[in-house]
Image 1: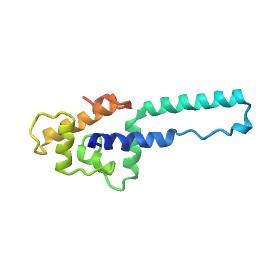
Image 2 (image 1 turned 180 degrees about the vertical axis):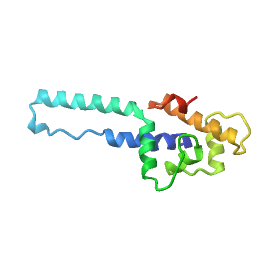
Image 3 (image 1 turned 45 degrees about the horizontal axis):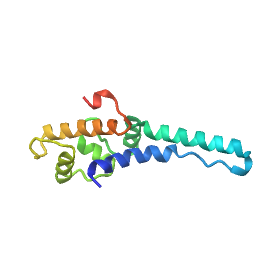
Image 4 (image 1 turned 30 degrees about the vertical axis):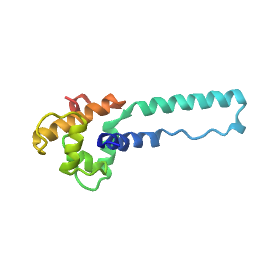
Length: 135
């Protein structure tokens, strides 16, 4: 599993946990109503999971972090917020995974590119990401 997958799972997993519907009690509903309720719940869950509000999830996590983390602009702080190793080696691996062609030296240029690339990838994978985070 790549580093981007860890980032995506950390964010999207939080949405999936929140979107899990409570199971209906089949004995309390007639068969037709039970099938319809289950079908509606599954449709709602798949819609909710496919529209992950990345900004809301990260803002909520930042509020609980206990330290100021500027996840909106810093790839290091974003990774720390998600509990992912933000070392230079991991950022180099993430840069290679996402197709960065510049020097892998931890420069501001590399880190800014990484943050934008991660946000674009999250958006491409079903995340709702504000435009100012992907430009």
